[in-house]
Image 1 (cartoon, helix red, strand yellow):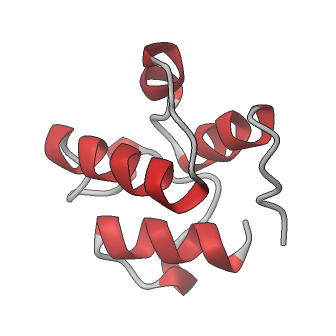
Image 2 (tube, helix red, strand yellow):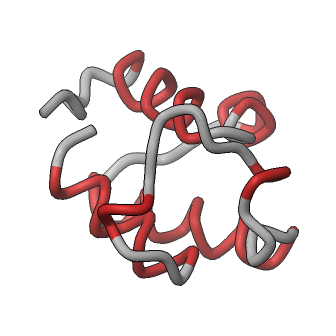
Amino acid sequence: MNKRLRQVLSEVLGLRASELSFEMSKADIASWDSLKQMDLIMSIEREYDIELELGDIVRMSSLKNIAAVLAEKGIDVAD
């Protein structure tokens, strides 16, 4: 995951960028509740100037899935 995505996730979820890994999901991050989910969605939309569909939002329950949704939107999130 690239620095740009790490920064967004870090700011919203309250973790250091170095603590984030693709294997992490909502279950692994105590601060990731429904309000953080909406904050995360809005931050990603703003950062990448995209609009996420409901199906995309529902799928975004792990960092790996967030990266996959962004990749489907044509956004390169690789290191």
